[in-house]
Image (cartoon, rainbow, N blue to C red; front, side, top):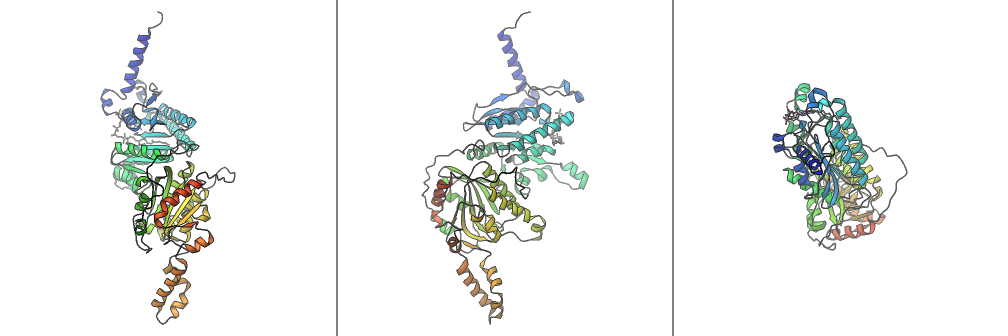
Amino acid sequence: MGFRTIEDLCAELEEKRSKALAGGGKEAVEKQKARERIAQLLDPGSFVEIDEFVTHRCNNFGLDGKKILGDGVVTGWGTIEGRKVFVFSQDFTVFGGSLGEEDAAKICKVMDMAMQMGCPVIGINDSGGARIQEAVDALNGYGKIFKRNTMASGVIPQFSVIMGPTAGGAVYSPALTDFIFMVDKESVMHITGPEVIRAVTGEAITSEELGGAEAHNTVSGVAHFKAKDEAECFEQVRKVLSYLPLNNLDDAPVKATGDSPDRADISLRELVPVNPNKGYDVHEVLTKVFDDGEFTEVQAGFAKNIVTGYARIGGRSVGVIANNADVKAGCLDIDASDKASRFIRHCDAFNLPVVTFVDVPGYLPGTDQERGGIIRKGAKLLYAYSEATVPLISVIMRKAYGGAYLAMSSKSLGADVVLAWPQAEIAVMGAEGAASIVFKKEINDAADPSAKRLEKIDEYREAFANPYKAAERGYVDRVIMPEETRKAIFTALESIVSKRDTRPSKKHGVIPH
Ligand code: HXC
């Protein structure tokens, strides 16, 4: 018979490629989004697909008669702003994007490559979960992905983009990654769906209410970003990636800026009122301080009493944490502690300096908080700052009381440079509370107790509600004018960016959770 011609062999490859591109069939290709999504996410023309001829090996329930080239997931690599990333995108037109043994093997392959090359992994999830016909082999596939997610954590950035259903244990792979991006009215994540909940508890709830983008971005805190559509979602992914290094041994890219580090914004004097009981929008402080007025918020809709996100100063990426006096007076509670501590650990893992803006009255009092475990959650925040080895800069804008003062990146926990504004009040508690306790007898014995109380509050405020007591002891390194904040952060960062800090040798700590 002899050899076939090269033309014949290439024609065969061409035909197989077309079949692989057709995904779940002619009709399905119309709906198929897996490759389109990758194309939208990556730099144009940069995607290189691998494993496009992989098929499942399952013979159960007639599946042997239904083999689709590439099976339920498209995998490969490409670039975002010229930087290499590995990707997978589930194809809902192939068995509902469900995950069989071979899909898991494809995903694990790109994850292993990403780890070896030190590049981020971005997974686009659109799947009916474990492929039911493949039973325990499908479950084993998830297990292998979970293990890799965990091994990759803190080594390479891992992003999960949810663009369809994610049900059952399948939600745990995204939950093990750094960030979850969801699209409004399109993405859904839940462990047990509405039908199961109705059967077990009788509660009626829609899929969207239970596990939609809104629910996970505001109530549960499972997701980190919500987009109005897929295009905006991919923009968010590209934006977040621009602040990050490709891996834990790499440096984040420095972005050129025309915004001078010396720029002084005098409006900061008025923005934060001296009266500690008055609110203001801390986002405005951040946009006035950082390069080009840019601040990219993470978990914007969850635990709004604390703000987390990325910004740049002098072109360098930093993680930012700020109390938000406009919500719950900026106090710390369970959700805020969870949100901030995870973000700090993420920054620490990827060598991003953390800049903390402090204006905190304390921990939120209440039975819900105590019973919900504010002790362990609050401890987690102390732990996260204490174990961080990246450069830490704090700006005490106004209130810094008690345990919350300590928790918000204090000198005692290891802040490298602590700056304070002239209206900063660093004390065990606010002047009202403190005077009422310390001068209780004097106030009660006075002819006019309320006048005496006001006098004592003023006396206490004069003596302690300022940054200078802490500065005398070196807990504050510099007292600065509000408008000097940008320059002061820049110069602090330039001098501590080379920080090298080590921790005692151990397998790992036992973080309160
Ligand atoms: C095999 C599946 C599948 C699955 C969907 N399909 N899910 N095939 N295994 N898990 C197939 C359907 O049979 C159908 O095939 C096609 O995908 C499209 O599904 P539809 O139901 O027609 O689509 P839609 O109405 O949009 O509903 C999507 C859906 C629903 C909400 C995802 O299909 C669904 O509820 N699927 C099951 C979800 C689930 O319970 N999965 C297991 C979770 S447990 P045809 O041939 O008709 O087009 C889990 C454990 C992981 O994942 C554990 C890890 C530790």
